[in-house]
Figure 1 (tube, rainbow, N blue to C red):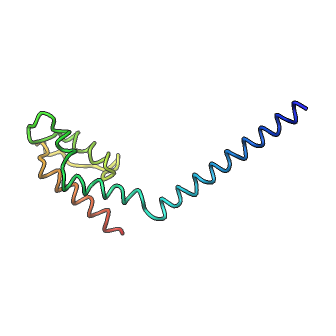
Figure 2 (tube, rainbow, N blue to C red):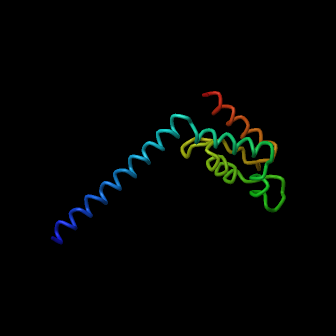
Figure 3 (tube, rainbow, N blue to C red):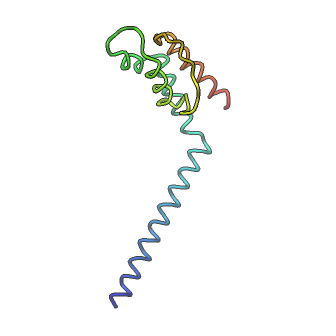
Length: 114
């Protein structure tokens, strides 16, 4: 009898995991179909363009510029730059104006696909 009970529990747990996987897949498909992640990326980028809070957080010493590495990581965090994308470092710091301009440009590139 114990073996039967264990078998039923295992079957029940497998069914629950299968249902969760199915719901997760359904949710993932919905997000992809309606491009929800792209929308969130756009909203975050727009927020940074109009309220450059991320730049201010990165420029904690108030120098008026951030390093190229900080700039690239911020773009990756926002989903505006892939890990393998090549960006040119001109050796100068990235100012808030340049940061906002690049965020705006990359956001426009993403939204032109819609």
